[in-house]
Length: 322
Image (tube, rainbow, N blue to C red; front, side):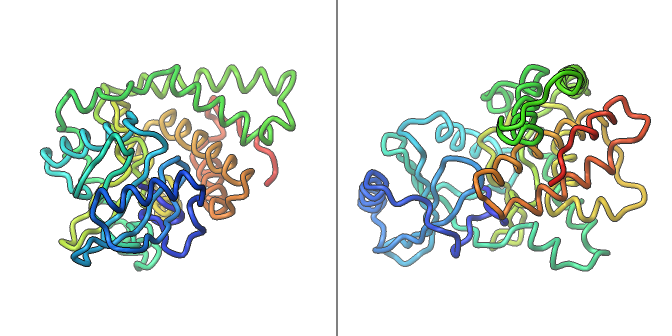
């Protein structure tokens, strides 16, 4: 349930679809979950799920999630992994009701603010403490039941390389309009394969959220940080989630300001940064301007984190001018 730019979809975002089938599904969900009239459309992040802020007949606010299809693996994974995280002591949005055959769920409304908002509004001296608080959640994430951690395929070299192929297409080739060729193409293919292999081999695998950045952390009414958008959790390198938290989006501002940022595996950091660069460039090609600052931050991260002596330094020469 990540959002743009915050963790929960913004109420002032453009409508998330207005097709006849969606209106029909909304009506069915309203009846199924005994909801009050009206449903405020909320914008999601890069996924296909649709979100609506709704009110129950008792007047309580909730978030209605419409999945792109009935009985989807993503819906089943959300519910299963949410339970495992709760049992591990990790705060997640409560599931009020779930109907896989309708492809809809009703979950706790955590509001509109996320950790990214807190970081931007906090004094520089407080940002490190907020990121430390967030990283402490990983202790619970890494203790979840093995069946939940293995529900999705683990990160491996092939998975990472596939992600980097998307980066090549959208970040370096303008969606295929300007293909890399010759030595530039060979350089990318060689170094991206090496980067994917090194990142996958970094340390014993642990349960990994996959998108553990500040926009996917929200503070509930109990003031605890809650984790959202966790349905893709899987086994991965130990540094993967800390890298996402501290080197991506709002968290990167604090990290880039430090003379000595937290140590992490170079390959994991660079693979994640190149991967999200591709995601943000894809969104910009689709006209989603809200991703421009995320893209610019990622470029700054790549330039800061890639040492001149790094074997992956030649990749920086392939970045096109924004």
